[in-house]
Amino acid sequence: MRDTAILAGGLVVSVRPLDPDAPWIPAWRALGGDTHIRNPFYEAGYALAAARVFGAGVRLLIVADRPPEARGARFLAAWPFRASWRRWGVPLPVLMGWTHGYCPFGAPLLAAADPEAALSSLLAAPRALGLPPRLFLPNAPADGPWADLLATRGARQAAYWPHERGLLDLTGRSMQARKTYLDHLSGKRRRKLRLARQRLEATGPVALEILDAPAALDGALDDHVALEAAGWKGRAGTGLGQRPDEVAFLRAVLADLGSEGRVRVARLRREGRILASAILPITSAEAWVLKIAHDEADSEAAPGVQLVHRLTEAVLAREGIDRIDRIDSCAPPDFALGSTFWTERRPIAHLLVEADRDPLFPVARTLERARERVARARLTSRGGRSA
Image (cartoon, rainbow, N blue to C red; front, side):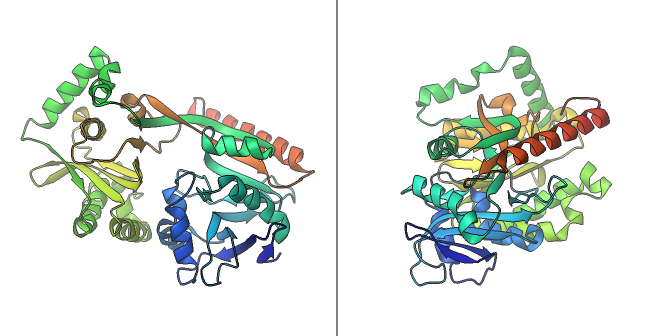
């Protein structure tokens, strides 16, 4: 395997470790802010913070106009990945897009100026570098600009574990349309929300806070960790309070994004008590629900549901969280919290993509389908329900 190669058109492809001291980090940061499909979880600041905890064996596949260490290098594409040599139990390797518990979106970063060239070069890179000519992208968008680019490129692909997650999308809606957005809620649902809100405020008024000042974010994370520790995760020993490395990762993310005004912490507070908290990275006009926690002392008051409801109302009215038109719930399949209030859906799937003339792609496609069927059968037998 080579670490650098030049493609026929002159672009340079390379593979590099996730090194925070590398001279090309500014070029990666610049690409993250000007991509065809925004993905905060693959941007430099977020990815480098995550690498300390989740980055063993992860490398970055880069497409640039010159070697990444060269002065003035401009990135056209970046994709963090691991090489898996026996995913299917046979020696048929695949490049696996990086995923972990805080990375719910797997679209590569492609330069907005010429995404077609960026994708073509990204797909040509594995062959040029002596890597396996097949890519697996967990939690990739299953429609929209990414799917259109793949179709234009003509690369063979297959989708696994397709699902849709709740998405709030107010792009282009008038203020009148915003005012009626929640009219789809049934009368029964409205009554339940009203009673839960009354219960939540029985001992005092509850305020929605939207924090974005860098000085407030560190304390907000401490409150978030404490809130989770007081619930079932804390009792089970799986809460953030028992995972200091992950807390350090989130602290680094909040510091990095907070310095650019690109993160919010939304929470419900009753006097000095935090009832629910959500961490929201921001890309342009879109927020992503990275982490949510709520007070479990009174489940009928449903503070987590109340937080999402009141956050939605604030975004609809452009109050306290202005310039946000979209919120991705980042929710797993069958998780209804975001989809209760948000009518739009983002189709998501794990995608197996042929990088470049791969005669074994049909074999890989068949093996991954078999792997999916076995996993679904195990989930059904263990949980007594469909995956």
